[in-house]
Length: 98
Image 1 (cartoon, one colour):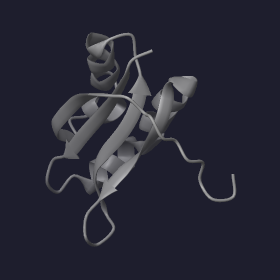
Image 2: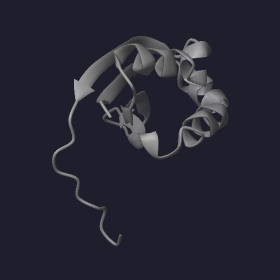
Image 3: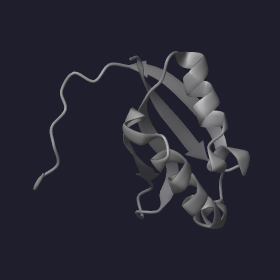
Image 4: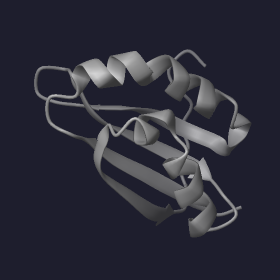
């Protein structure tokens, strides 16, 4: 199945909106099951979230865009920009201790 990177940049001064919406965002992506390969926040120099990056499997780019558009973060208006980038994972190393 095709893979895509969802690269989402937060709007400035939106940390409180991110925190408020986080539980719904996590629930949404957990429901996506093993088609969510990897995900997490991108951090600024101080260690605060400044966006999200996820690697997903989807039927095509239109399906990846739909998934992204239905993310509670996107629906809440958190993102200034969302990029959908076709991707192909070739090397996957398990995290330490796995």
